[in-house]
Length: 100
Picture 1: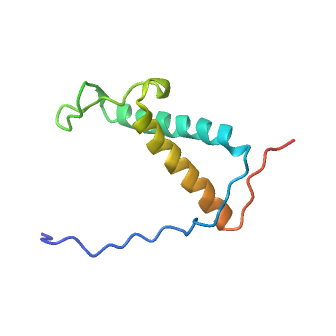
Picture 2: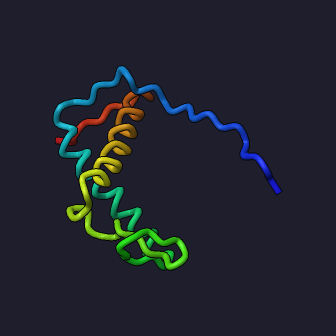
């Protein structure tokens, strides 16, 4: 049995100089909602349901609600995840553009 976790130093892709195009805001909000929906679907498939407090034993979570009903702090978590992912895509040399 492991008594001490292995040394871990997160090394995300450097996105500090990446500026996303202005029109990406609508896309990022749609992706944030989708990120929440994927998370919720997976939780529900594992037997989780809504509960007023997170309870790992009872498999209850207060965020198992539609994206629009989440508190801003939870929405911001999904938004930040999406924006960092989009920035990483650009940092890796790809372009994000809407098809015509």
